[in-house]
Image (cartoon, rainbow, N blue to C red; front, side, top):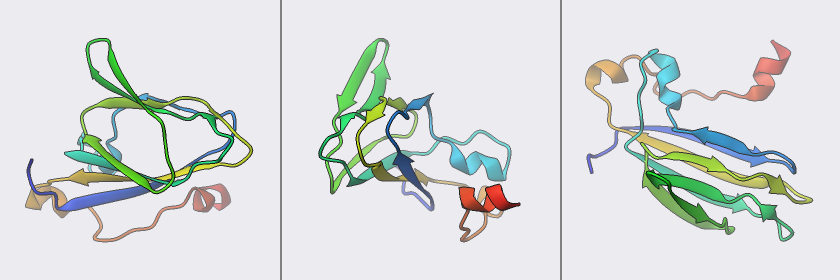
Amino acid sequence: MQECNTFYLNPLVLEGGTCVEPHVDCSISLYSRKLTIPNLVSVLYVQVPHDLQGGELLLETGEDQVVQIQPQTNTMLFFRGNLEHSVNQVKSSQPRISVICEQYNLSETRLQQIPEFEIQSEADKRYN
């Protein structure tokens, strides 16, 4: 695996009744309008409610092959960035919270298109 030089952190808070549809992470693409897939994705489970039903991470590992991972608090996992993945619907009294780190290896040219450090918030978007 190539060394990574760019990291995109994303907190994921899933309230009861929510899920994450199948996708491949590519958050860094919004800076250059060029589809860019991470080399590696890390997930740290920060809070997994005791009464959680659902909320499993599903990894599409090939034709009709799915790996289902049950989240556990203070557990970190890694998977290839090109894997399609989703999260089953969450049913719980508290949110399921994880932090995702997309890890990229970008050329010097691509690095120049991306801020060295930036904080974005959905709250900022609501009030603008």
